[in-house]
Amino acid sequence: MFNKKLLGSGLLNQSDLATALGLSKARVSMILSGRCRVNAEVALRVEQVFGIPAHFWLKLGNEYELHGERRRLSSQLAALSFFGANP
Image 1 (cartoon, helix red, strand yellow):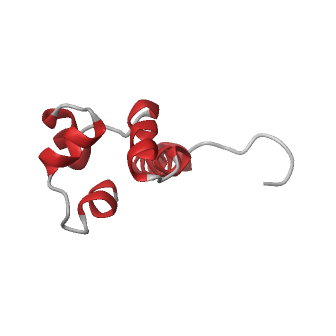
Image 2 (cartoon, one colour):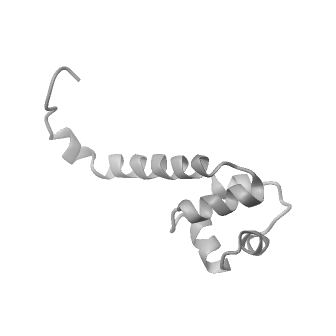
Image 3 (cartoon, helix red, strand yellow):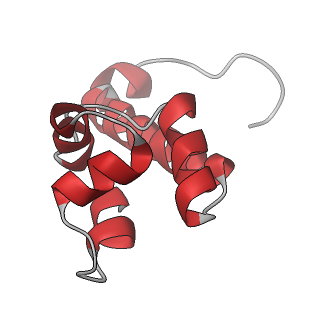
């Protein structure tokens, strides 16, 4: 999503994006490839440069992480019992 939203227009390449955000090319590459999350610092930089709210990126990152962990832990989670009133 980061890649599509910021580079999808074709106006910027990875190097231009790194310069605009004040980040290293390596860090931007890691974010774009999914090897590194968009943290609060990066989200704030994107907000300042592109006007896309920081909370959008943080929420998107959390949802992506939850989805991955839910898949990874599916059998372990299924084995757990709900504790409390009706779910």
